Amino acid sequence: MTLAQVVAWERFRPPLAAAMAGHGSCTAAAGRKRAAGRKPRDEVLIFKALVVQALCSRSDEQMA
Image (tube, rainbow, N blue to C red; front, side, top):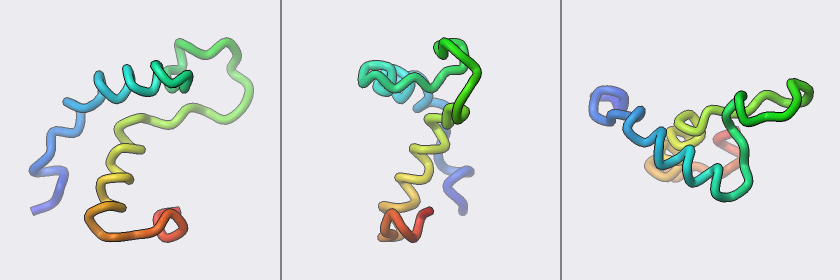
């Protein structure tokens, strides 16, 4: 089985968005003042990468 079949990733979006907003990280495009600069990353995508990194014992460089 793959993680996508087992984990309902979208359930984590509200708490992840709240946690990122609480730390001054704006990820929602609506919360940005200007369209210039790097586009925000999806908080669920970041969370998936961190889970895979932990499960597979990968370093930050290996994940990049």
